[in-house]
Length: 277
Image (cartoon, rainbow, N blue to C red; front, side, top):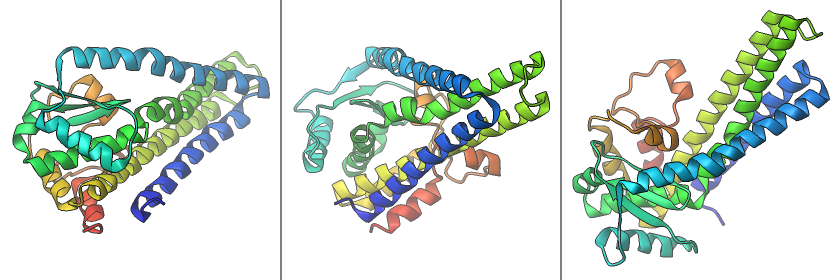
């Protein structure tokens, strides 16, 4: 049975997924014929499937080409293997380190990449906590869900908007141009905001699973505090796409920035972890 902290985030996540599809589906029902709605939906699924099939493997190849595979017997690999055993995860997970000007770690499909600078900055227990966090993302197949599940309603809403605006301009019985454009922009914004919310629930979930796997939630707190206090410029495009831009130590986010952020603030994450102490 899932721990209540993890179950809570799962419920929030799947509720957000349902809400995103409800928004895009409602937009289709309002602006398109059934046939056009089916066509747009099929195109959205095909587009996200294409990203998953072609762009993800390419991104993995590019990143691992400049990274070093951590071998069996190395201390960092041993940390991950112990976490995998505790979690009862049956699939192999590759671990890489890379030279980069950042102190980040991220995961994609069945691999984890950690910056060498991160390994130097954190102590062993803190590094184990970070690996536990990333292992949670791997176990949840979150990279594939992010592309194929969460992006689909955003792509669909954008497609509906383009088609409905085109129809309005052409005078083909669609709502007026301002109505079509307004509804479409609202739906794209709403699905993007829901997408960001869903990703934030995954971060809370990964934090909770790491704390449960290591038995030391305080070590994840100290790791997050160290990392978010370091200059965070210079993230690669892959970092930004698949791991998100880390939140500053004391964020001064505007409401819109907070709404669209893929990560909770440090204060929010620490507050959630303190409940597990």
